[in-house]
Length: 424
Image 1 (spheres, one colour):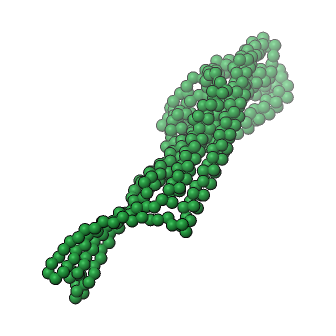
Image 2 (cartoon, rainbow, N blue to C red):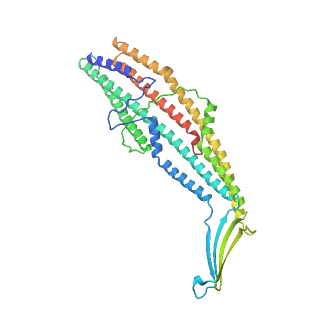
Image 3 (cartoon, rainbow, N blue to C red):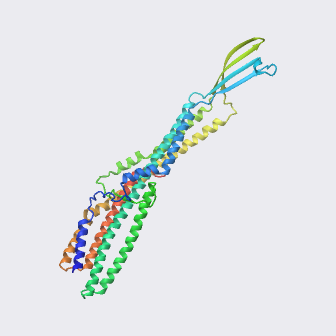
């Protein structure tokens, strides 16, 4: 009876130590090898080390440089000429001319070029926000999954301890003739099956932590302690408000709108290519006549005429117009895709939230009451130890499935937040 009493004590201890629905914040790491990691810290680390974000940051910087180039004037041209050279000596030339020519785009061209280049910067910045949002959602899902696997491992470890105690009890009862050997075999099989589940759960937990480490730019084998609990926030979700928020905050749609704006500005610029650019000339001439030297200054104005046989501007306008049409189609398609993704993500959130509510409103209380009743019945020999173990396993399974429901709900919320930044 000493071992049977041990089972009862262990079961009562498990109930008293079972994680509450509120799930307090995890304790910090107790060794230097473990890195305590909150969800926010994981997201911050991933954003800091993600190569895609680092790459697009360089692209944005390069695009800012192109804005400077697009709004700059062409370098001036310097010309030097000498005529009527006497005795092969340049300093005795009868005429020496020094000229500077500066090209100036037709009014409006330089501004439009700068506008197109600036819109490219804005488009890349929107792409950067889209990548950040999608990465953040991915980190959340990975973090939640790793935390779920850890809680699954903890539940199985507790169940393993209870079944090990139960196996010892069945052996003792069989040795004194109070039980059959079948109970011993069943206990061995049950314990072996649970240990296989525990081994697989530990592997899944290690893989999940490795995936999270890699997202954060850390070695996959780095040891971390996840301290942000799986908790379902108390909130009321309004379908239209949630979908509208996703559409309004979509960086994907913002990038599509900016690209359309840039295409329209490029079409205006192409239309101005028919207008002549201007060249301003300034020259100085030194005339040598006998022993006298005279200086003269002159100015000139030139135009780059788009003659009738020059068809390049027509091709530019046609290309720019086609680009505008393409970006209009892309924007319309992106709007449909984003709204559809938001609607689907919202439905998933509602479904998973209902599952969490079911556990919190009835299943957890029911199974906990059943376990307590089973323990009371075991005290009075109304149920045997095997039935008590079955009840307890159901309790462990319910806690695992509750954690799974929390993981699925929180992941669905993360996907809803990033639904506006899917690829069309």
